[in-house]
Length: 289
Ligand code: ADP
Image 1 (cartoon, protein in one colour):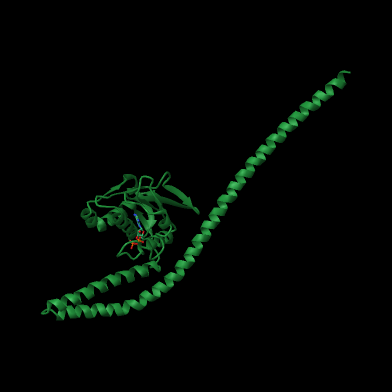
Image 2 (image 1 turned 30 degrees about the vertical axis):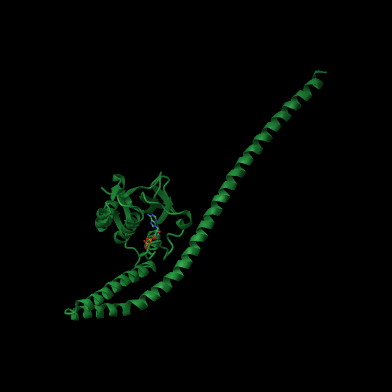
C-alpha cells in the first residue's frame, strides 16, 4: 500500500526535475543561438565592409593608373610653358603690363604643377620608408608648416601631452603631410578663431588589427562638421566643396594611412565639428624614452 502511494510521488519529482533541466537546456540553447546569430551578423558586416573596401580599392587603382598617365603627359609640356613664361618675364622688364601677364602665366603653371604632384601622390608615390618616429616630431613639423595660417585666422591648437611621446612606425614626411592636410581642412571649415585639438583616440587609443598594434590620434575642430550625405565621400578623389580645392588631400591621406597598415576615419562630434582619427602601427618599444 505504502509502495503504491509513494511511486507516483517519486515520478512527479523526477518529472519536475526533468522539466526544469529541459527548461534550463532550452534557455542555454536559446542564449547560445543568440550569441551565434550575433557573431554571424558581426562577421557578415565585416565581410560586407571588406568587400566594399576591396571594390573601392579596385576603383581607385584603375582611376590612379589613368590619373598618373594624364599627369605624366601634362608634366612635360607644363614644364616648357613655365620655362617660356619665366624667359618672357625676364625679357619684358621694360614693359610692366606685359611682364605682369607673363608672371600670371608662370603663377598658373606653378598651381597646375602642384595639382600634377598631388595626382601623382594619389596614384601611389614611393612606398613609405618607415622608422620609429616620435609623434611630437610629426605634430611639431606639421604645426610649423601651418603656423602662419593659424595666426592669420586667429586660431589655436591644443595638443594633449600624452600623444607626444608615442612612437609610430612610419614615414615621417608622409605622416606630416597627413597632419598638415587635416589641420588646413580644419581651418578651412571653421570660422576665425577656430579651436583645433589633437588628442588620443576615443576610449582605447591602443588597438590591434591583424596582430599589428595600432595607436589612434584624433584631430578635431569646432567647425560645422560634415553633412551625412557627404561623410562617406570625403575620402573619394576629386570630391571637394571648396572653390579652389582639388579634392585630393584626404584621398592621399587615406592612401598614406593604408600604405602604413593603418587607417584614417571620420565622424562628426556630438558637440559639433569634424573628428578625423588616424590609427598607425606603433614601433616595438611604443613610447619614446
Ligand atoms: P580639398 O581640401 O581640396 O577640398 P580634401 O580631400 O582635403 O580636398 O577635402 C575634401 C572635402 O572634405 C572638403 O572639400 C570638405 O568639404 C570636406 N572636409 C574635409 N575636412 C573637413 C572638416 N574638418 N570639416 C568639414 N568638412 C571637411
